[in-house]
Length: 464
Image 1: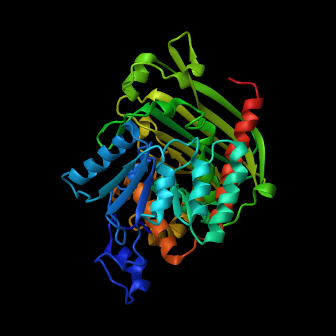
Image 2: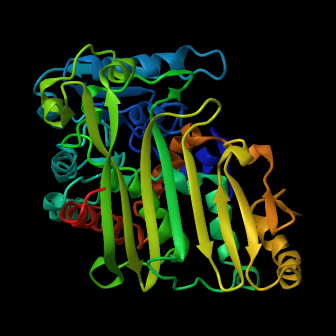
Image 3: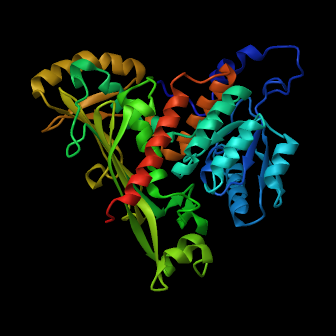
């Protein structure tokens, strides 16, 4: 998977080469094939990040449908910030409809052909089903579903999308993080990695841990979160939210481009959930609200401490491989730190480990640690590196006291916000092709089966 420039004329050529026809053109592509975005009820900053850059072949006019309120205004403010920034400003034009009938109005107007959904998750599965049923393509932020009782509805939505010949896809940004891409690439070098171990529940073959923070800096300013973000009935618990990325990566790395059958290939071992607690002062700092709203009072203890089930851990087997994923939410990161990721893939010849702690200056770093003796691994690395470098020019390794550090040129270190553009470009290519790879839809279904069933299991288990 070769990285490409953020805005690329080559991408334009590849995406719309087939669009040279007699239809009237606009300068960005033919009217017939122009992508026109609709943003539905944007309550999460991920909706804005999809528009942090411009895309060839995508109309600059974006229609927004939402109820009136602070969520949609925060979204519009972010878009305006991108339009007015000094460095490569965007030129989006937001056409906004605000009203209680916003969803029905969106369906009736048919002002675009791709609906971007990133916001309150309580009704997201319903919105997805109705939107694809009306013949719109959907690019949805994770999670697409937050409870097991809606899982079959999501399955039906994928079937409906197939019938309507539209594409339903979720935004899996972590596939574009360079250390993860390289972890996957090195795991496919059998002389270096060997084969993936089976592992045990106590010592899984694959572990992925993610640490996040409620108080954070996004696009140069402290993020204002909607109060409902702390309501698991609306946002979803951590075990069905951020773990979506981690479960996706386990599938994507361990069984690349292979179809996962959730009924046969997935077996849950254990799951647990626990809360992050914040006081009213902390809540005010991230929401700009002076009191807990009524819908959160069910989660408030002693009239002052909000308890959010934002943390979760899943232990499961995927085709007999033991895996563990976990997400932890702290209130605020230590000075100089941010969201962090830890990952290990255990091979019969070497382990591939991503660390992002203080020693790494909170930058994700990939290490290769031999399980079969450094001499054998060093020889294998010399043989394997040309194949890695062909896909990722400039990548190298540096010997350490224990194992090797993978040296990654700065050009690959884009950061999380840029990855939304990568996903959108990939989705645009799928739209141009009129299809996605055969494994994508069943693997999305398998991923959401894992998270929603894990939540049910965690609720039944003894809580921390």
